[in-house]
Image (tube, rainbow, N blue to C red; front, side, top):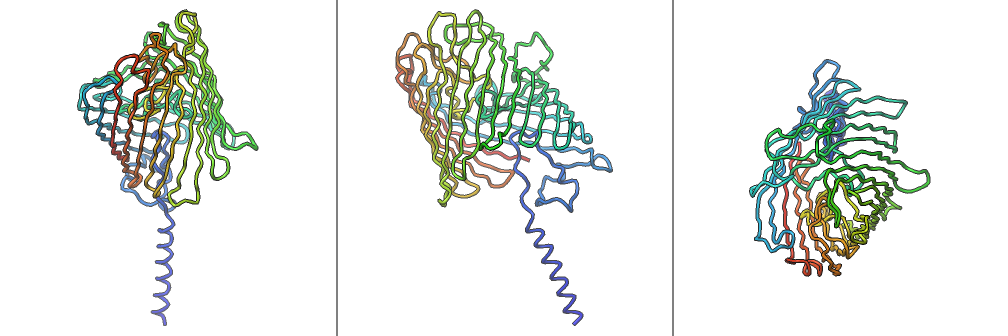
Length: 469
């Protein structure tokens, strides 16, 4: 009887342990902004709600007995193959090349109020050196953060140094995930957060990657640095009774040299905008934004705007979770030549892969319609297909390439059709560390390219493997 009781107790204990193990879930996915990751759940092994991970020992390295001073280490290895034909429609020879991104970061937490974050980046391509693709080794991020609680449930952070910035859907300030070298700024930033409200104020200068090792100077307080400047206020908040979230923002921009259509000179541009995004019920997802810009380039005054709306409908009762969508976009172009005004919208620091990884065009002087469909055959596999149609918004303005440079001037041509682009993306997450992405696009040149020069169709294929730790 005693033996049976002991066996029964042991079985109950073991089943309880197994149940507890089964309840544990995979650790959170790695963030697009690695500097925001928090591994304090590793402080106490017994209360850790997540499964053990091979990299846990370097994610929380305690440096004192209280474990409130600790170090966290991480990084990424991202190899990619690319097949390109007729880049920029100019009938160039096919390009097949290999590229890679190597990143390594550390996060040193010094108690409740201070932390220091640093990150190195290396970019390589097997063909000739290329801007934001090739960089031997450089400091991508290096900032110190001071964090305080103003009242219960809120936080105030002050960040000084080299850091990544990204707002909204990445149309105006994106972190440039497509190329090897992501975008960072030498900046000062203040962030107030409480529940679903977040307010940010910032000033900084864009870091321009060079090809050598450690050749990017810190430019925040260098008045002679020619790097474009960014400053502004960005807010995100929820209105009671309304679905989704809201964003109101002001962005200031300055560049020593800018060229849009018929003007060239120093540019100071101000952007005022509003964005609403979220869900309506279980099926509808939406993202709508409106931005107005003013300022001057040389002796010409700026008056430009952008409006876009993106809607998706989730078929929740289908096995593959199919989601058709439609995006509509109008981005202003210059209306008249020589009138002392410039109406070309500027996407400022847009993600160059905004329309596709091929980075062929950018949202300036564009009317676009983007029907699409996404589907999830499994939880790990996401498929996405789209067919984009592009026209020039103004026949007196030209075609621009990322981030905001004119590629083909109007030259008095009346043709507006820029063509259409077929795109397909497949993403498979093996686990939280390893993922495989396939991006394919085929741009069919339009009548404007045919009238303005070479008009070869562009094909781009890029399988990308990413391993994060």
